[in-house]
Image (cartoon, rainbow, N blue to C red; front, top):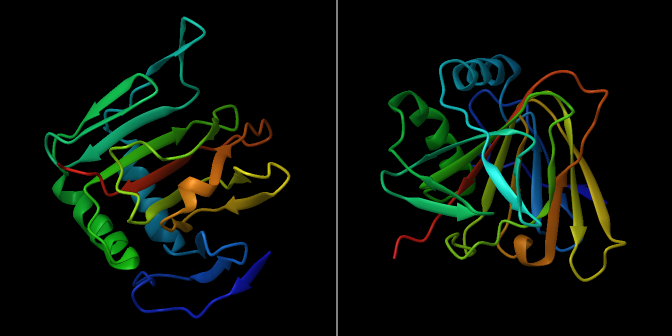
Amino acid sequence: MYGTVTETNRARHPTSRMDAHQSEWDKSWTHHSGWLASEDARSWQRKLTEGMAWQQPMVHVYGKKHPVPRLTMFLADEGLRYRYSGTTHIGEGWPAWFSPLLNAVNKACVTQYNGCLLNLYRSGEDRMGWHADDEPEIDQSEPIASLSLGATRDFQLRHRSDATQRVNLALADGDLLIMHPGCQQHWMHSVPQRRKVSAARINLTFRRFRTC
């Protein structure tokens, strides 16, 4: 399913052990294994785990409220709003200490992200159902970057027009997945429950939001 692509300086993190693979289906995504070195990935995971305002939003399902099976946090330009599944996040500005990581991801994807949704999967019990990041607030002409920290979790993709076309990516600590423009229109994705996984995983999804 995958073919090795040429590594480029713009995609490589300074501490990378990166091995880049691009999907051959329709060039919808590129998987950079080990984009962050292990030590850096652990450092960022500690910073994001300790003392941050993680929340567990409620969602409406068939008229009833249920807590989402994971914790979330939103970092973004001040005043930026993002609404999905009945939840509204409002950006309060970027923490100064986060800038090195934001700048590195911006360079890798050749864009300027103004928002990042973070998900904390406390163990393999936490999960994410099938969906696409196709809300109207998101600029679909820009790539969406997904950075994984911590435990390896399966990231599944399913083609919208042919549900038999499925791909499973094992996203490990420090991996960067770049979903290129058009990916959200053609593919849905999920993070399924994996009860044998006991360790935590943080996923950072960088997006370019429309501001007008």
